[in-house]
Length: 243
Image (cartoon, rainbow, N blue to C red; front, side):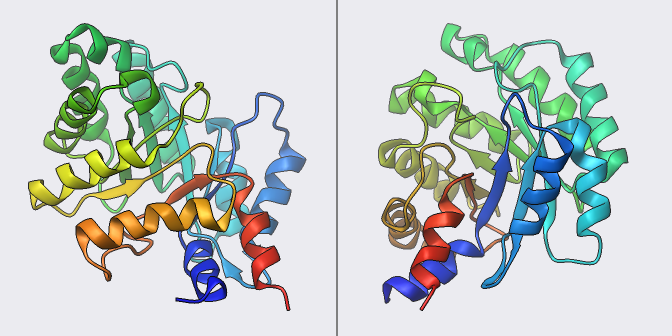
């Protein structure tokens, strides 16, 4: 595959993201405009919950999904609050909910707390909306814990599992993604993967696609099964695609 064809494939898999603390409405308008670029649309935009309605109104009639985050970024344990935020976001037009797993509970071995959150949010995210569960693999650290978190998320009905919030020192890594892909493969279920955080170049992204192609097969990674959570990756992709 040429670098240009690789860049085109990557573009179609990007969840173009602005989760900056100082994000404003005008930034979201610009994000939605950039998602509809000269070389094609990204898969989705990902924004804070208060901006979902604005994104949904701008992107209505396009192929671009509206994603938002809940229990973000710290992965707390207040299930009722997270469920309420999720319902409000779906009512505002969100197509996809990126839920931070209570990763501190995962670290201390409190799987009951983890399952409580995952199952409660799953119950209110109805098809065709998707639930993407953020594991925060940089905090889970070891492959055994990442594997177990992946298994719990899939058991609870996640449509995607995602590496990271992008708000910790370590975000996506090839090692974590390899473990997550292996769990998806072994589950036999139609679950997608979203590497997120620190993916800024075409080469960075291609590394993860190569892993998906090797573990899941070369036809597996599509916008329905594979996303990149990124803010700067689109710049690199467009630079590669310009004559």
